[in-house]
Amino acid sequence: MSLSSYPDAGISEPWSTPASADVPEPTVESALEKEQVIKDILQLRDGLRGLLVRITEVEGHNEKLAKDNEMLSVYIDNLTRNSVVAAGNKR
Image (cartoon, rainbow, N blue to C red; front, side, top):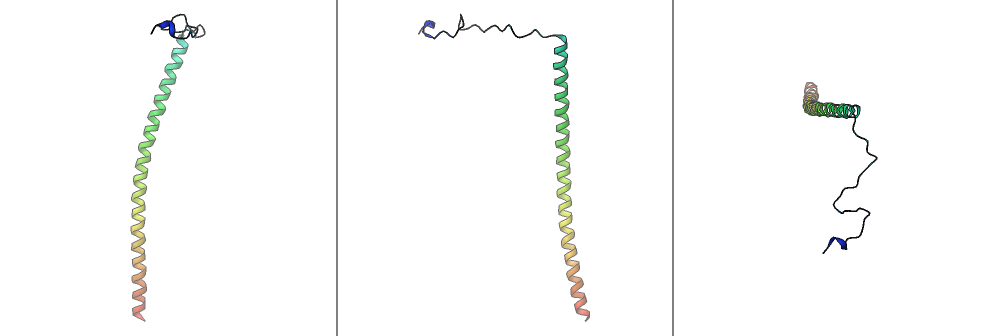
């Protein structure tokens, strides 16, 4: 199979890359802006990581409080039942 069997795609040589005359050359300002954007992204990413750690801590604390509330509810129910039983025995 020869290269002449491929259809012409408007490129003189099939292995060449098309030249883009519209791409401006990087300037110092654009490089500084890009660096600042990268720093901002990294800072935001670190902030998100911190928030995820805090969320995990709060979820754990919330689960502990939910278990404590359940235990207190059972305790109060038991006290109420015992009070009703004790009051019924006095009469």
